[in-house]
Amino acid sequence: MFANQQAIFRSRWRAMLWASGVLLLAYCSVPSPDEDEQAQQQASAAQEQHHNPWAIDPDKR
Image 1: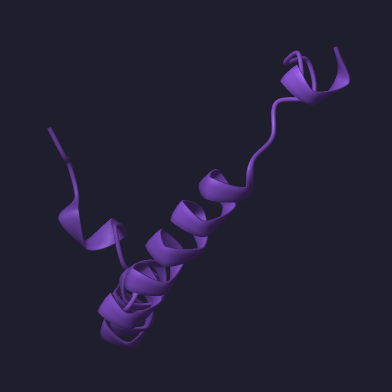
Image 2: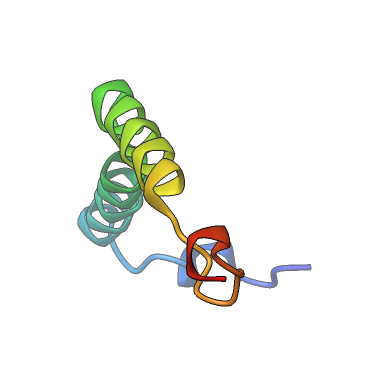
């Protein structure tokens, strides 16, 4: 499959730099549990306050 596996990374330092970038991306993309709970609370509060603009209001009949 790979003819020359040394061509993937020219040096160990570049391989470590690439690996640290992958780990940093994974670390930054996973939200903390506190942020997840806050987002759920905000979504539920927004859903409770939602008003359908196309709905017929019984008070305006």
